[in-house]
Image (cartoon, rainbow, N blue to C red; front, side, top):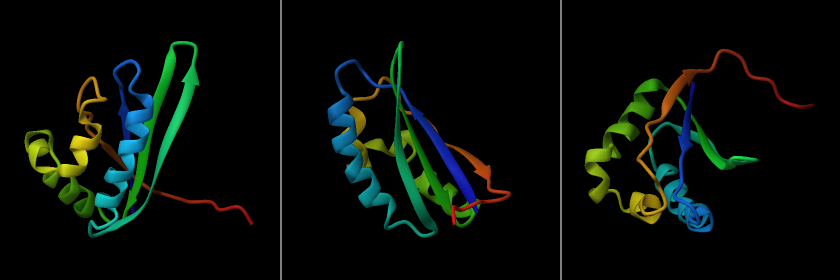
Amino acid sequence: MIRAVIHFELKPGCEQAFVAGFADVFRAVEKQKGYVTGELCRRDTPEGTRYMVTTVWKTPGDYGAWQALHAPENVDKATWMRSILDTLKSIPVGVPYRILETSHSR
């Protein structure tokens, strides 16, 4: 399994629209083969609010298929992307990490 990590840089004042629009992103990704789970995370810092998404995929190929379908050059075709596109300073690219070990609370 792999975990993909994506950091988002938002335009000022777009935080609520981004979070609301991200529901469309998760609805789209939940239909993708090999998708396991994902989280939208927020961190407040003195410099501003930062957003990060992590997703877990069964295989690198499954995540690669998602990336290919929703690459920046295909943004006009990705209806889910339109719901957050205007909130972004730039379109980020996810970085996959192979999961070596996991731990769960008991």
